[in-house]
Length: 456
Length: 113
Image (cartoon, rainbow over all chains, first blue to last red; front, side):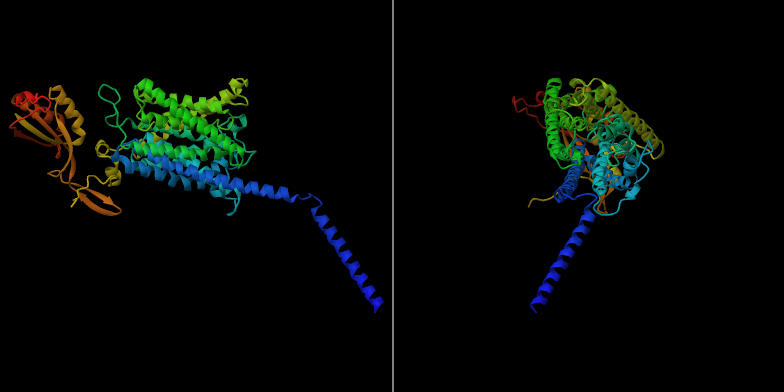
């Protein structure tokens, strides 16, 4: 018995040993090609998930900018057109979302043939689920909608609603995404053939891609529309057509400033310290723009003008959008500050000299300061800027990119609005313009007129 | 002394004001008003429910003038406010018993001018 027991024990021991050897060998076989570091793996997964969360939060902040645009534009125009301008803002996002999902995103980020993307229409090829592409799509959708909604302010108070809807679909369908594919097409597929990006064109969060594109289209639209009735007197001098609600406009600007903390810092699409740095440069530029616009209006117009200061804040934000990741905080102050000065003179220039009626200053804020912000990177870039010993190369590339954006958006804009004006018609009748588009186009009022009620 | 009350189309206010200033009638009060008349109304809708709006927005001018200015004021308002369409408005001319300027205590014609 004793012997047998011993035998049994040693047999069991031996078999356990054998099993362990076999299992160890099997494990070693599986792991042999790449030894796994579970800590590194967990860190990578954590980083990926944090990137997704940060990019989603940023996208939601940028989405809220739609509310900011709606309030700025409503506040800076007359009460009789409030329903119309709110409808335009709602529809820019609502039409832009499916159009960009179905077509725009593919043109912008699909495999490029050199001119535009040719794949990923309707997100074909990406399984529904947790793939990064979905986060990237929502982030890019809110950007596309921002470009679209810039135009409604410049064309406010006199554009036929149906014609505006046609424009709104076309910008998200082709105008925005095709230029976007040249400058940003390699953001998703990094070896994509995006010619401006390949040349080294730097537009971090979209001074050109988003703001100038929207701004130049706004200019084309305002030119073809012509000024509002009563904007210019018989002597050709501009008259003030006052906005009806400055508190709403101010609220809108604060919402936009808030949303910009998603627009610029979120364009890292990476949860990391750069987001904080970009929040600092963005904030400095916005503050500087507000201050310099205030001072400029005080000196030139003799009074510190609120609507100019509000425009100045936005000018600083638009200007810092392209260079926010690659310039020093001091440079951000200068870039925003120059933006605030530029916007005041630009508003006066378009009002008095060019005589283009832009009720909310969209062209001056988005086109002119988008241009300035893009150029400013060529001057102030810590890596390659003219003022940092980088020579003229980067500046030249920035000018080229901004010039191409102007030719593309302004040229196509003129064609688009001309075709609309000759077919559907672009402008409402003079009678409707006088009564207000709220009643003429929508048959309802934003502020239910004069309510007669008893107090007893 | 007469009190001239004119109801005009709101978009004609600037023109009427400029024409009156040219005719040296520079004193007036202006208020928003609602009214109905031959112009009838128009239809609005709210959440799918249609309703008739027949109180239309008008602007009311009140101008106190001395006798020698009455015809000039009335004719100026007509020439600036008239479009020829229904809804152009009406002018009422009412006798005025007295007029007092609060600052100086002047009464009658001198207080108007």
